[in-house]
Length: 107
Length: 162
Image 1 (cartoon, one colour):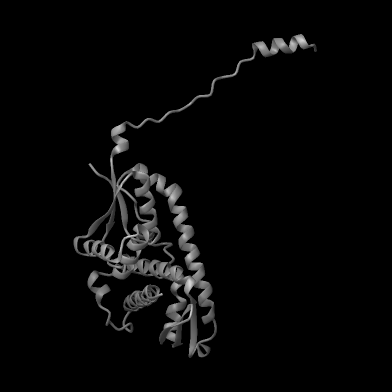
Image 2: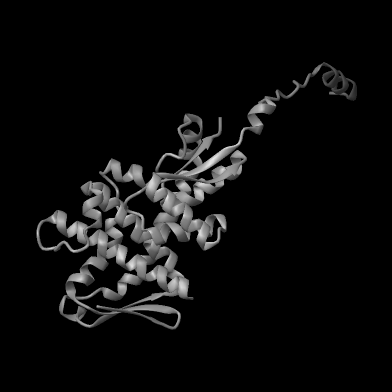
């Protein structure tokens, strides 16, 4: 084989352009705020729930107790509102403490 | 039974065989196998949106399972102090290092939730702290839920004091 034939081979070979998949979300969807909701549970202790709110959200004791009482009396309380990723993070933390928590899109 | 704080640990002393057995049952009580309702309670849905739930099951649930298993293993190791025959359990003391407090809170919570789901206790039953455990298996399980709740309260109180 000679150098010439190598050049010919290089000339004829083609490289396919990589396929790039793009996922688009419109601006309105990205801006939609989410809320973290904690639901009532007759098993979890009130003192335990208060401690979890203090730890996860950094709330002072009084604010954590207000939310705990709202959960207890009204069945649910909105603990936080904001971007989806952060809301998911908070819900994961709350599930780690075995609280009934969900994230909801605010419409 | 006496509970007190000794330095960087919680001490539970004068454990009679009955309460010692309830302690020993904590790790096994977290087992939700064969009880789909209990399993659903430990790994509850994070959202009404299917896409989020599917992602959650793949990425978050395994993490939660690891966390719960790790807590239970820590508690089981502490409870090894209670191994022995019934007679030797008299005046036995269980020492829980304070750094294990979170694992204990988590494991006790798992146990309470699983038992409560298995027996479908009503709110009234869960608030009845004076019921005798010496009736049926159901009464004993309700006593277990309340006893584990009492332990959680004590651990929480000591955590707030520190």
